[in-house]
Amino acid sequence: MTYDLIIIGAGPAGVSAAVYATRQKLSILMLSKDIGGQVAKKAVDIENYPGFEKISGPDLVDLYKKQLKANDLSVTLGEVVGIEKNDNIFSVKTVDDKEYKAISVIVTSGAESKLIHVPGEEEFAGKGVSYCSLCDGPVFKNKDVAVVGGGNNGFETAVFLSNYVKSVKVLEYGEKANADAENQELVAKNPNIEVITNAQVTKIEGKVFVSAIYYEDRANKKEKKIDVSGVFVEIGYSPSTNFLGNLVDLNEKNEVIFNSETLETKTPGLFSAGDCNVSRYKQIVMASGQGALAALSAYNYIRKVS
Ligand SMILES: Cc1cc2nc3c(=O)[nH]c(=O)nc-3n(C[C@H](O)[C@H](O)[C@H](O)COP(=O)(O)OP(=O)(O)OC[C@H]3O[C@@H](n4cnc5c(N)ncnc54)[C@H](O)[C@@H]3O)c2cc1C
Image 1 (cartoon, rainbow, N blue to C red):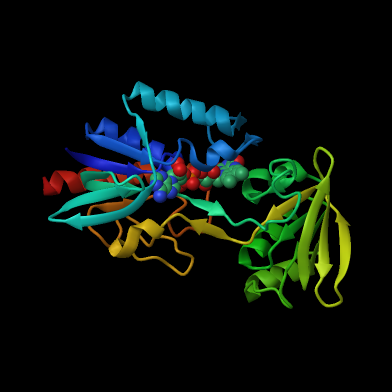
Image 2 (image 1 turned 90 degrees about the horizontal axis):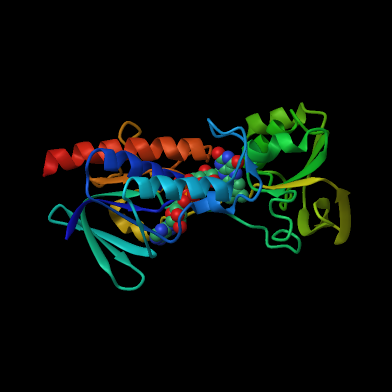
């Protein structure tokens, strides 16, 4: 069977794309490793998604599942490992050697935050360790926090957090921070941000919540402790885009480059939405919006070619 549309991924972008595509009466296959994506990992409340003052990740994922069911949509669980396009038809291959065909494909395979892999990171994730300052920053009002990573993301996070918190220590592994001049200037002007270079984070400590972060001063090999209530890890993302081969152009961070009006990639009929795309900010509301736009663009493409 050849579907009108295959959607890869079932996080906010994939669910939103499916809901919009089904309203256009397209035949749809959703292929995903899970339902909910990063939202399923959000243990504490989401407080920046319109319509919900507060909602936990698992509760939002339950609502996604209900909405998919109400629209007669189901998710085929599987990992996509490759895509090809021949004679205007896409073949999508999964790790268990299955192959699915469609006129158009929307990729919503998201991204994962890079981890620092130190003791305490996993234990305190959602209990003081955060990978999203826009999501969790306000929770740390008047507290001392650390930001791991002295690139642009780390510096922007520090400046954003400084609006809420008492103090921010930015821990940078290298001899100097890599953030660009503009961010360096903003941080330098901010009295409650301190940048510590040559700092290799060694562990995160706490009881129920984070209480301290330790790092080795790489210049003299001495371990130091900073008392903090929060640790924001800002060392980048790994977009799930390896399986796309040469059907798309990627930037230096392996994010998909797309046409901003339609979200079409360089391959006609192949669209991309959400955190796997080039984007400065990665948020549920943005991924959902892109999912909707990609579905409407895919509908227009399918109408034109079939
Ligand atoms: C801990 C945490 C807290 C967060 N808190 C907030 C918050 O409070 N507010 C907010 O707005 N944002 C928050 N975010 C960010 C938000 O979750 C993401 O921006 C959003 O989930 C992106 O949606 P997406 O659909 O693009 O990608 P994802 O949510 O990453 O979903 C990707 C989907 O693709 C699937 N997939 C990946 N690769 C493959 C493959 N090869 N084959 C098949 N399927 C595949 C995955 O299984 C998943 O279903 C948080 C993120 C994290 C990690």
